[in-house]
Length: 635
Image 1 (cartoon, rainbow, N blue to C red):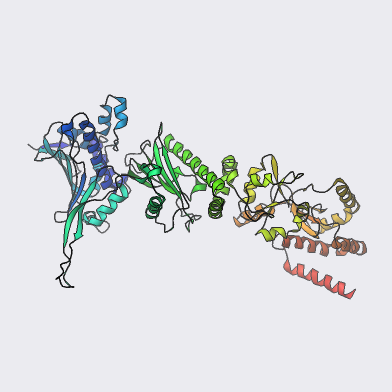
Image 2: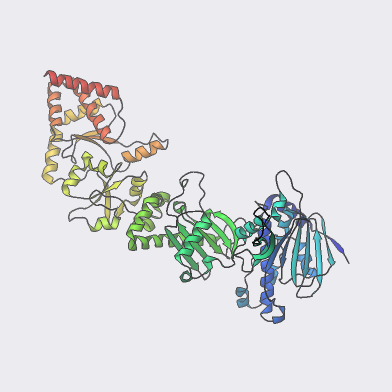
């Protein structure tokens, strides 16, 4: 006898939401129905542990398309449903039966042994996104009564007796009519079914089968132009056992590399593969990869970071950005956990402490593996750092250096005196006796830094110098401030404190003697420099620009490129008191104080050029040099 029942009001609302709002992609329906089928088999399998008669000879899920009737069926040989369960699970919002099943297990240990995917009871309703009518044929192990549930997803549904030999459930979707926007017939396509199963349900533990077209072998006497004959075969289309669920010792490098290349569409093997298997209060599996080369758009605004998210082998999200910090955005991979709180569509994560804990653990694991690579395979690490080192530098700099202790020993930088890049620890270990600070300089490359006149005194002492070439480098150094008790010191900022007491006294004495000349040069530069001093860092060079400790010329340049032209370093013009140029200026000043402005501008512009900065007025600069050349020739 057929019985018609009304959907509850909240269920009607859910059906409308299901079709129009909750799910981002209509194709999700197949994942949901397969997950429900897997749950049903889990329940039957669990009950069979105490009653062998309830077990099936072979558990499986069948996806069957019928293009003639435009129906798609999902068939399982699971536990089936009674009439009461049909009403409660399909006629009421958020009741899949999975939670009730778990609640009815009295033994806490047994609850941990059974693995149920479904939690929300709305997966079934996703069928109405693609179906105008849904029929459910089911036979419960509990009662053995075959029943048929029918609904168009509107106001009501019917339940009636039917015929069904095997235990389990068969869901038949009568697809909607095609529209300009959606071709529902695609879901009947053999390729589409296989593609969706492999995308979302590849690692469901039971075989998912469908009918697959196979080509018959050609008869030897067949003509060349004779059409090939085909037949259909039932084929398992899911992998069932995820690679990341296996023990690391069971997986070869070749399998890992092939998995990575297929999964993330790369033609090169990854630079590093990382297995993570955690069991305890929080249980999850993860498989992470560092690509050999970064994607072309890694640093563009359009690039989306994130790891793929699975729950019990069922694909949930393609890019879960909460699982990876921004500075590790180049890491690809996936996480599979049953301990995350998903919303009713299983598409998004609720605010979840477990998610944050997994993210923190993965970050520590990645950094730990990088540390091992640095220690055990230096060449490989240098290859990694060449591609991704700037990311670690930004990670160290971000959030006011909150992660500097985690990252500082992973940084390697080129130095003036060594062929290969060095860590801060290695630099400190090779510091000669008497060196108190860690020296660094910014420039295009090692040659450019070596040619800076400010390097003269440091090189004379035989001290090594870090060569900073990335925009973020000086910001990173400012955040670090020191390493192992040794302060970082720019060769271009503040006093280097490398002269003897006698040398310092001699320069200070000369500065006092020449204070009028220095003041005249400063005044003629009209606020372009903070001060004009006799240099305590130049040996061979005539002049240079330095700045006070803190904000540097390099920082000014970087921020200017970021449309912040107002952040300026305070320039100090340094003149070498032992250079012939200074002596010539002394004579010129004594003979004609009015010409000092020309000399001052030339010295200042020379300093700008040495720093790689644009000069203020090229025309005036070349004019002053021409006049000085003419005057010197005439004399």
